[in-house]
Image (tube, rainbow, N blue to C red):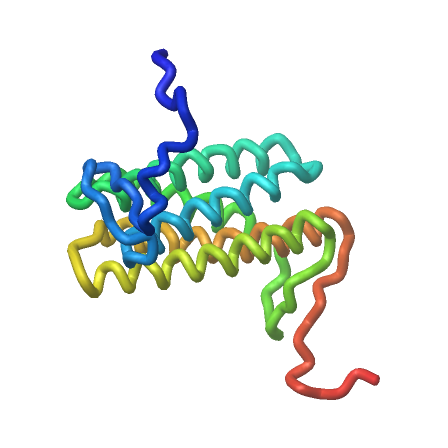
Length: 184
């Protein structure tokens, strides 16, 4: 494979613009740049999650998700491109259902936390929700692949269930919201 990035800095962004995958330039705060930038941030958070001691199955699941998030970022950086499809969404749903099977039903809201891995997973979930909002904002201005929005919605659900699963596997009790009741 050829060396694609021989020089990391180009100085072309010094004017507050960035290059899209299509070759066009856009302001760095453009909704499209915000959308794929937040997907990149999410991908980084998933990378931090993977730095924890995870089961091989969980690590493989997250490795695949990172690949798809990179695809999604590319899709968003090239107007008119569609990479994420219904099969990607279905795969997330299947993983979600599999993880959720072994968890007790929820009757209360769960606060983010628990093990380090679960806490990072909750952080990734929150970033995923923000990425979803950014893509929806972009969709209000231009055509966006609806499967990408569905993918992010399902991924945030999966990350929530995965956080619960990680805590459960570690024997860590979930921290439940007390509804404003003072616990002192």
